Image 1: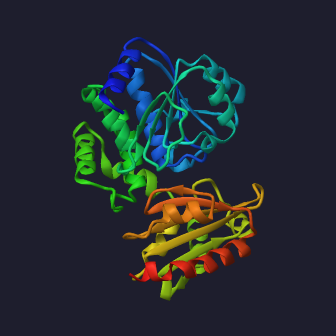
Image 2: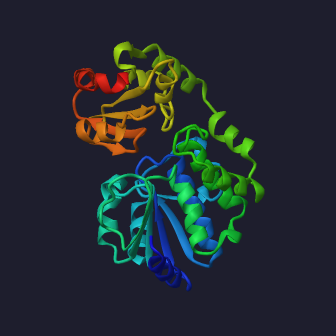
Length: 338
């Protein structure tokens, strides 16, 4: 977003507007943190703002300030679509292609509102009037912080905004571990703590609220862990039956793929999760170093994301999806051995 665009958007936001803020389908910590952080900021400026999520999100994120005001399009369709029709601006956060918001794609396309994209994924689609896209950023939450800065309003950041933004930065960097965590990221975090954010409370709220069944599911996933030594690759699979046996709830598989990457010598980790109702296998890819899982996911599994963290999908059954992955992996063996 160049200076002229910043000034133009600032002018638009200088008078009260009806604003809708949308995360991607199956929102994670960065999606909900960024939307709720922006929500609180815009409310402070006097705008009428509403967060509309395409579908529900995990319980471990439902403590974030403002969560009780979030509309779920899947459950409150008529109300949500009326707000989209009435909106002056629609902000889309943490995604850059409208198909990523599921059933909200068409109503957003049809809305006459000015559209603003804030996102850190690769290859954005051209649907927004204002685009703030930066693949070097660790999270959309960090981008919202910089967006507020561009608007000249860092002094507006308070505890509710800070708690939302801290959550997304923390979750999208795996607690500040991933390579895109920069010194600037830490300076942003330091400022959020300075305004009153209690970092340890947020870590506990997100990571220390496991149900007994989720820990049992984690045990099942680790029991299914396989390691291909000559490719430095670990993969995990979970079938629909295994999810059902362990009373799967939304968010229960979050972060499981990282256990594969924690193996000594591992450079590439994958988890395959069977969703029979949707007729797909959801896949998460993680890597260390130079191996580009964004390119891998885009080329082979209808996905994408970041260099070291991406998602994908397959319409094959679970066994065949894994077999396809293993056969493809042979072509990357030399790259993974360096």
